Length: 146
Image (tube, rainbow, N blue to C red; front, side, top):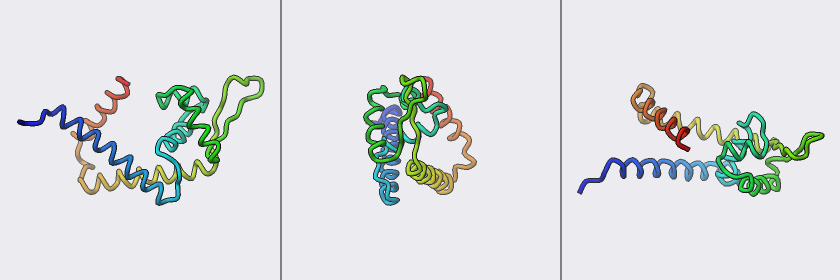
């Protein structure tokens, strides 16, 4: 009995996703970073938000503000981010990264750069426009759908 393309694609996507997270977590640990991948991704979302409010960061991560609060509490305790409000408006809570957070994000970005360079070199992908087009379409699909 042959395996359906749907099942193969599912297994490949899940496998690639899990491998990347596992390898990245190990890489961060070796660099002395004691944060979960979720915490690192929260830092990244704060950095990439134009206006890093709790609601904007939660929206970017596709989680509730309550869920984000749990992560932010841990990151504040660990010294990776700070909360603040602007004068006159205590309702809006802003998030600010610390120097330690920026250090982690540099390690995180370097890992991604190294990983992509290795994949391109090892699999000779720099000229593979079909794969690149397919990945772009896949990314667009997930952005639109979710």
